[in-house]
Image (cartoon, rainbow, N blue to C red; front, side):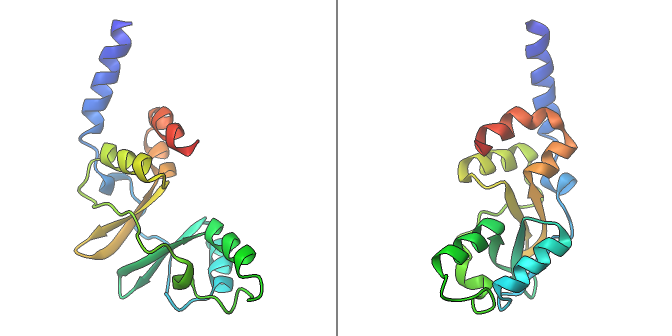
Amino acid sequence: MFKKIYKWREFIRFMKKVLVADVMTRDPVTISPDANLFECAKKMVKKKVGSLIIVENKKLLGFISQSDILWALTKKSSNNLKNVKAIEISPKKVAVIKPECELTDAIQKMKKTKFEKLPVIQNNEVVGIVTAKDILNFNPEFYPEIEEFSR
């Protein structure tokens, strides 16, 4: 039992030195705010991603996911996907994180906001995205932490 506790403490001490910049995806898939939902869906399929960051001149304007598009299909059924712009259905507030934050801070923010993806912002510009998958690929021992908020 003592060995497990000691190993966990060592693991936490090590992880406090790992920054978001160390594991983030540096070239996130983005889209312009004027893009319609059909273009968003096409880009998600082509790039094999579940979400897009809405940017203009590297500035974060919003975030759109597959579930946002599905919501729009059910709520705005009279319109087709080409008549609804991405920015129109994007949440007004998007949780973000800075690249110099510790990875443990990113996990805590993901748990608090219940978002599995956080745009990474530096000097008011999008520089990347960190996802639960990025964290698990870096260190699978975080699975219990991440599983807790994905329920």
